[in-house]
Amino acid sequence: MMLILHVLMLSLLSGGSAKVVQNFESECGQFFANGKSPTRFSGAQYREICQTLNNGVYYATFYDTYNKIPVYSAYKFEGIKNCKRLNKWYIEPQLDDNNGSPSMKFEKDVNIKTLGDHQALNKDYKKSDRDKGHLEPVFQASSQGCADATFTLTNAAPQNPSFNRGQWRDLEKEMAANLSNQCKLPNTAYIVTGVVPGESKINNRVNVPSHFWTAYCCLDNNKKCKISGGFIGENVGANVTLNKKTVKNLEKELATLYNIKSFKLF
Image (cartoon, rainbow, N blue to C red; front, side):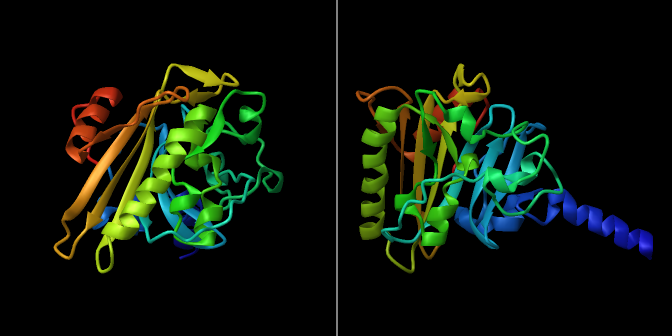
């Protein structure tokens, strides 16, 4: 009996029931349309994260520990909440230590010798020419707690400052306004926002994405995407063009960019 209990405790500590999970469709599938996550890649470098802060689970992130950036974050949009910005950034302890906290923490509160082996740290962005670009943004957060939880480096990737503060921020607000008007209860809006790895790094550690992309689905009572669409843009300067796409066409472009046979968003 004692051996069984010991094995059970090890299993719990390994991340199977905590923030870094074995299958986030079963652990935090409420953030995916019809409980089905976007395409996940195979390989030891990828982690599935139920983004947790102070025991609240707010969204889901598929994370690439090799490139030290997320592939995508998925979340529900519940209207414009006018949340405040936290402006200090958490990290995910369990990416570098299976026995780490199941909740995101500030770096100063984490005592892990290998911290940063599998994720970006704040120092990676210092003296770089890149912003910490949110995937789930504050403007689309469902509560102040969720807005705070978006400030984790597992939900960010190096983004051109002009792009981040210009067209991309305008797009985040435009999507929020349109979904607030067009996707009313009992319909539910789901958003997936991601990046495509590029060919350069900041601090010789963190990949700078070549593209940022986002897609939305307003799920009706019949569990169908009543309203849907997407956008993709190169992670360059102020003059970047954000291309509007159907979900199907965005999936085709992402499959090409990720060099895989197919990519499914919803």
